[in-house]
Amino acid sequence: MSRAFVKDDDDRPEPAIVPARAPYYVLDNALAHLDEEKRERAVVFDRPKAGVAGFGSRVHVRDEGGADSSSLIVNDEESDPVSGAIGYSSPLAQALLGARKGKKVLWRRPVGDAVLTVERVE
Image (cartoon, helix red, strand yellow):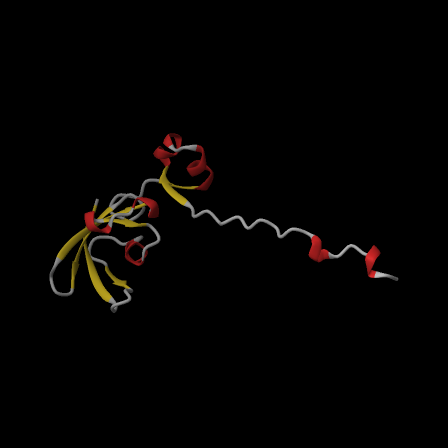
């Protein structure tokens, strides 16, 4: 059979590659205020339990050298580490999630691991 009468798969256009959309983390009371695109990507969290670090919590910690700092756990798109707002999927937020006052957590950083003690969760 001649190849002239055979449909070749190479003639088909390449399928469009659609980039994956990152989840958009929100607290349960903020869902109604999102635009349609963000609502489609929304991963909804209930407010964290009192005293337990979670999405939307401000966590105050002390490092091994005695320096105090605090971080607010927010959506990755809204993170601003300079002002203390850290993205939910960041290594620091992941270390803090579920922690309570007095707990020591291990923050895995590119420059070396750090042990932090949770002083307060708001």
